[in-house]
Image (cartoon, rainbow, N blue to C red; front, side, top):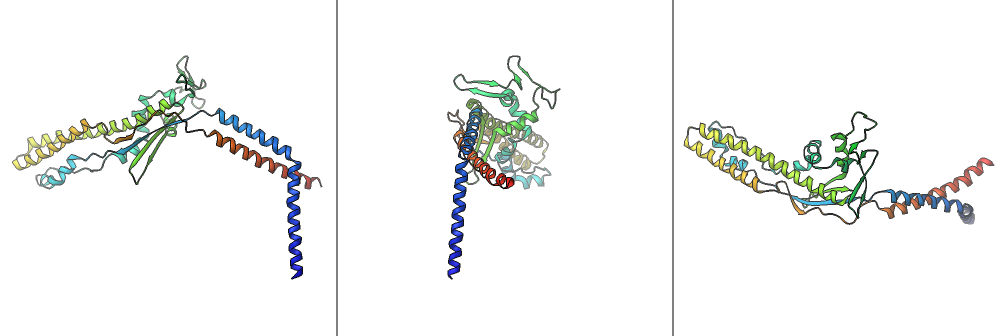
Length: 314
């Protein structure tokens, strides 16, 4: 029992000596720790200052699910239309919002709806933004503003203007889409060095999604109405004509709603705004992390210098 107590005191003493030794080692290398920490901290500060401010404009929207008039009508009259030998399959009564959330992140939507409505250099060649004058400057190695020409890429010297696929990959990095499954609210955001462009592009995404599905449903309804008019002329029984007339009336109502409703897929809860406060970079966090990194690396260097090279020399 007494021997066990003595061994415990001896181990505690050894631990204390080890901690004291570590303390003395760090004290001997204090100037290495101070200077290396300061150097890495300065590098972190310079790096954070070199990063441009990024502003994020967000549009809070909700799905504006419009009911499909002809689908509801076919639910009541589809059986009778089938007996007459008319095949009018009812479509889905669901809205377009779920499809639109996928569509706005697709290459085809970017090529047909976004790219024609933006300045490509604002996406691919921005270097900095002057907040006082609201002027963008461009990277001369990508786009020369004086001559309004693009500099050819080293990977493809024959192509000067960035391709739509390359531009799409960059645009996706600016675009954010978040859906709250519980509330049904959808946040569509755009981040850019210019808060004005961020707001403009966020509005563009929402407006173009509404316009795309509005035109799509309008075209389908017009085709359905034209088909129903033809069937009315061909139908022989008055009962069938009456059913087709009611179906045509439903399509006419749907067309009227499409023409009157601008918010066809997404309805604004909170429209995007020109933000005054940047969202990134977090320069204070970068500086703190660089100081912590410098401290840990310098301590590790001092310990390796003392123990590794000391043992190697001995």
